[in-house]
Image 1: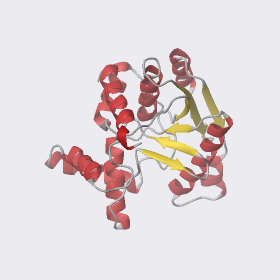
Image 2: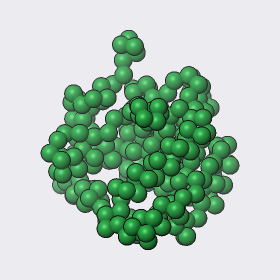
Image 3: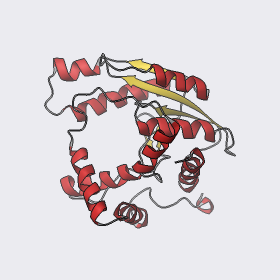
Image 4: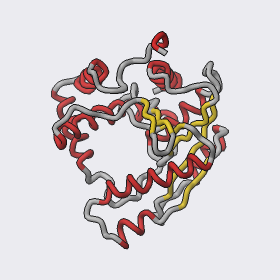
Length: 244
């Protein structure tokens, strides 16, 4: 996938859901994976011509795994002209050595998000961009249906009262397959997750389930996404500037 196609989808999502306002200072959470690095590419290019001026920062929360190499990510940020901050933590040690968690993902996500939000505030950012794509939207909805018995997923824009930060998700119009295509075509330096729990989660189960359903019924992901947009779910009505 070409960068111009990525920019087109990202800009449409930002416009549809009014994600950016004049003077925004936006942090981009960088895991080193394909999604966050695609978002970094898109936002760094978009700021050059988007009619509303905004700034961006790249931030990685280092969980403390010994085999995490962020050198190429740092080099990419320099090439794109984006300031890059790495937040060192002992989260991995706390979860896998001290507490020996059987189900580490929930606690890890909470601690990682706390460290990220602290860094975001210290850098003077008022928003954070997460790299959730269309597949993530649909998978989260299915997770909620299967395990909670409700029709729910995250919103394109969310205001966090406790931290006074807004979360935006500019990749929601991109399918995961398109992101993979962009990464391969543009030789994006993806960093493999060193987490021993990676790939063994309920989300991975739902991802594989959705993959099979989509193979049997091509286009089902897009139809599910459209169903979410057309529902009365909070935050999913496309922004209308006349409504203020």
